Image 1 (cartoon, rainbow, N blue to C red):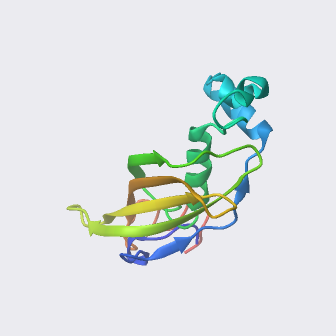
Image 2 (image 1 turned 180 degrees about the vertical axis):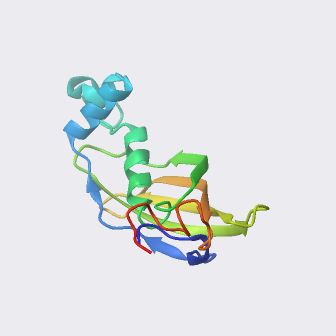
Image 3 (image 1 turned 90 degrees about the vertical axis):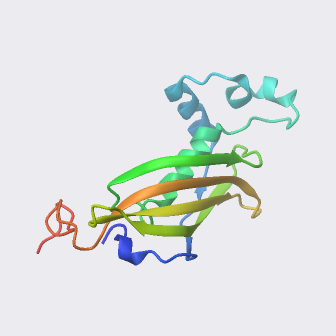
Length: 161
């Protein structure tokens, strides 16, 4: 099974996602190129040496993307949709060579008026290898109930009856 059904989430549950991901200079450079974010603090070591951190910073949207990716198997693998990213708070810098880890807490769950799906409200903390929180993300995920029939009684296309 990949991901969870709505009934598999419990309010106040803490989910520790694994494995972590070390973000390299190459990761940051490629992400900056792909997204056309050419701010020199991400890609120019000489420029970054003169900033308050004295080194390149990892693009915050890369940190967000990796962090959300780390949660997919446990949170949104069966999701119908990520409804929103209510807030993303950058709390500390991430540098080339840092490893990020994520843990999520289920803040709330509610079944929608359709009755075949529910909304799970999640807070995800992003931590570096020193256990310092670098980011917090609040989001709502729309997840099917176990009896949801869009893909054949809640099964993924490759699953057999």
